[in-house]
Image (cartoon, rainbow, N blue to C red; front, side):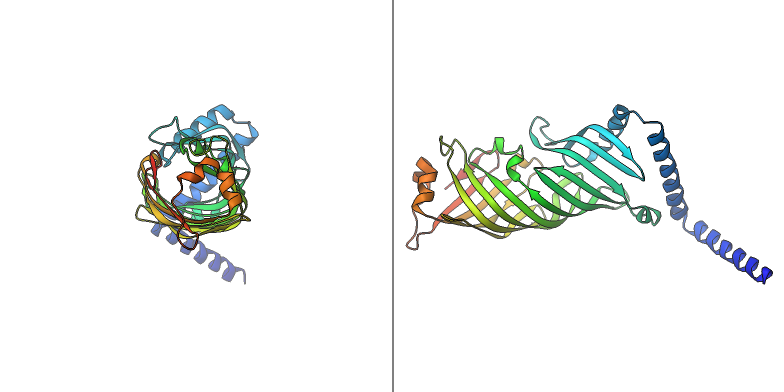
Length: 309
């Protein structure tokens, strides 16, 4: 019995050895994983300086599609990394802040790493809520990213991009999910879908339309976006409230600098007298309603210089 067990063990070890020799990426992945576990343990035990770690992380973020910088970083066991006070700016113009992320947790999938795939679970706290998902790289150079995400209690009104959009901004509670594939060197080639449910929202007018800052209540809504070959199209967009209903359609042709993305958006709306009063003087600039009371407004131009007609 002893000889048989030894023979089986030897045969098993031989098969494992041949497998590792025939697939060098496998033993390299195992080795890297073990080394990373050891290094992470050492860094945590010795309290690796946060300033040094943040500097290393910021260098790794240089190839991100947006300008990203973390002000503090912290290692957690096992194989965890948390970034704090992460700023996200436009790549072409770092002075233009898009959003801020209070914390971003990253945990790689160990089993995926052993098989040669780079995949990680991420969770971001931003815009008043949480975004959770899985990020995987596709391609030898790691430039192709595949992202699947779920978001809860997100308020787009907390985004910092509204300062460059003079007409209005949207506030409310957004929940939904999406999947996107993006090249870190050229995000205009991205493709994917995004679905969201909306409640307790407001469409707040900018001072360029109403100096008194009127708004329209949106009780509920649903939007579905499709991103393909540089075009962001509205598959479904319907919103309703006590005094207004809006239907959104059209598309945006994305540019490497988001400010210069070309818009071709159509908003079809019905407004009650209460909503028109909330709009104030801005109501006079809207197109005349048709026989059914619908107002059709077209938005063209770029995000930087929009044109309404």
